[in-house]
Amino acid sequence: MGKKIVIFGDYDSGKTTTLEQLCEKTVKVEYNGITVALDYGNMIIDGEKIHLFATPGHERFRFMLEIIASGLDGAIIVVDNSRGVTGVEERIMDSLEESGIPYVVFANKQDLDDSTLEIGREVDVIPTIATKNVGLLKGLKILLGKIL
Image (tube, rainbow, N blue to C red; front, side, top):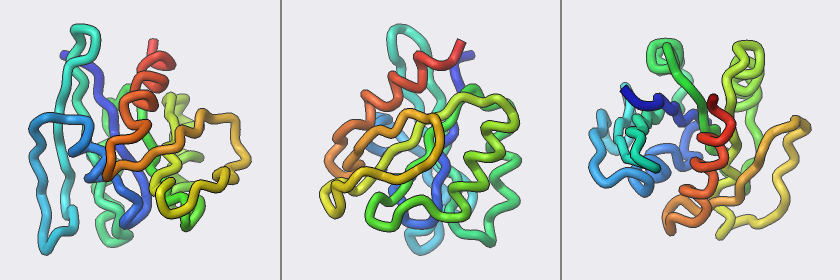
């Protein structure tokens, strides 16, 4: 069956771009360029199929998070490094930690702001530039190493 990885993050943090860069083929459910349900793609790493889902970032689609997150093996939280960690992303990290789900944080948009992301948690933070596919596979492999 493979591993289910969900990509979370606030609006315009780079979730869809991360998914598109990691996967050869993707399915997007968008309206006017905004994810309204989910984005999906898959890939194979070391012979295992990895299913990747990106959640919508707009608050009005928050109800989708629980549906998409059901049965996930791990998570990637994409943070716009030029904005810092938002309240939405803090709540997602709290929920993942309470559920014992392994996750990593992608400090995305390093080309706009390469400062160290202040996060205040024990979590792997991977500097990424999703538009240029920088750091994404490395971060995914770190996450897969945390999943038993």
